[in-house]
Image (cartoon, rainbow, N blue to C red; front, side, top):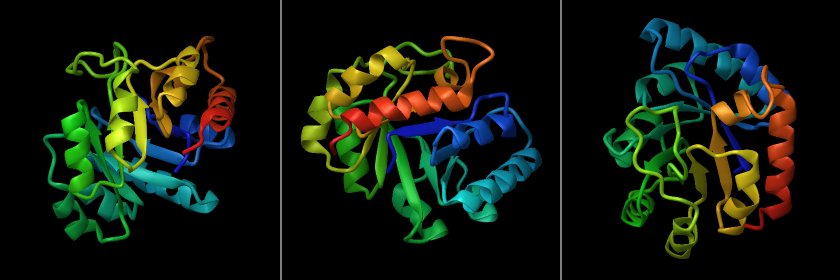
Length: 207
């Protein structure tokens, strides 16, 4: 796994993903809550081609059939999506399956059900999801990592100044959308943002 998990913005731009990859991102999630299924398919297919060329990992948010249709490496599921076992029946045993979690109990359950990794959060207030759960803060990460062995990716309102504390708490990586696409300076230099986040992550990442 990698210390930075790049998630596509709500307004999808293939150029943003290309820039993120140029900055060193090797774990990409295609998340799309706006476009039609046909457009999602075309976007995901193009992303699959790009990531395959450089050996990056492509994860599709929520939609197992879309991940199967384009040959993505795996899928990321929310708490209300299909069970992890069902996803594996569709995608195969080699597929990467992640699960969003918001509590210690959900994290433990995700591991028991066979998740390859968990996303945990939101750590801080976020504008990306209108229905986001209340912020958890950083502290629960340490408790979860004492109970759960699979990789944990922290998510939700994360900025670059949060990274040292997040990695120190035990997170294996951080997932971000807006902070990487539009960081301290806009228009964002996505490649530079990703490069800096990876640098911090690698200096702290001991798991």
